[in-house]
Amino acid sequence: MHHPNFKDTIAASPYIFTIGVAGDSGSGKSTFTRGVRSIFGDDLVSTITLDDYHSLDRSGRHDQRITALDPRANRLDQMEKDLALLKRGVPIEKPVYNHTTGTFDPPVIFRPRKILILEGLHTLFTPALRHYLDFSLFVDPVQGVKYDWKIRRDMVTRGYSREQVLGEIAQREPDYQNFIAPQKEFADAVIGIDYSEYGKHLGLERNVYRITLSQSRMKQNIENIDLSLDLYSILSLSQRNFLLKFLTSEHDGHRMGELIMDGELSEHVVKKLERSIEQQTRVHPISIFANRTYVTAGDLAQLILCWRIIHRRIFMERRQ
Image (tube, rainbow, N blue to C red):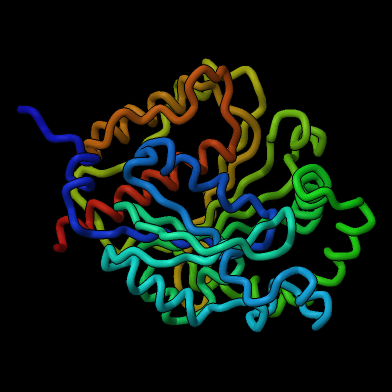
């Protein structure tokens, strides 16, 4: 029996599926939705960066001695109104913040596609924003990793000096703790990123980090959907260090599962997972990590998140 590709079902559906990703600037938010973009493609996925909703440009923030992490430096009320429209499939006139100049470019017409990703500092900040999200993620690198990444990014792509970046980091940290970190409690999944226990140098050299994927228990279960790792492939085909550990924890009375991964896995393991997800969800092709001999713990986390997001989207389809 031929089953239709679930991508076609999504394309034909009027439903706009929204994914919200929160976290600090330079924390790797776009990395963990890259898999969704890769699987579904530009025809089905659109992205909004919440930096576009800054209310103050760079000089304005400097004059008022306020950071972009402070909600007062952002038009969250406008974002709420726009998201309500986008959720209904209505195009908006979206503001545009230019990171190179630190000023605003003219607004553009933005039309939502069937999967809409919102990435930013305050994605989960207000009840109204959270109300319009179907799946939410918080990306949470430890301070050392976050600072490494931010220094590298802002010096290379934004033209800052190392001293400028360090000064900004010090200025931003209290606002991060006050306004950004508390959003973790509202996320369906939290990605923790730390240096690999196999060597801090592996992060810079091969993007190898210790990843903790904390997830709330799925509220919706769908028959015959499961995610299985092939232990034979892990044990017999991998020639590099890899750690896999599962812990349970309680957060505000909610049971969370924590999957801890570190090191690198043979691509055979990930290919089998990709085929398994294809068969279960009828979304195909899934080939996020083509032409790779090894994949990192972060890559595996991406794939697990894709599975979870597709799972949620299938449930939304059946509920309509």
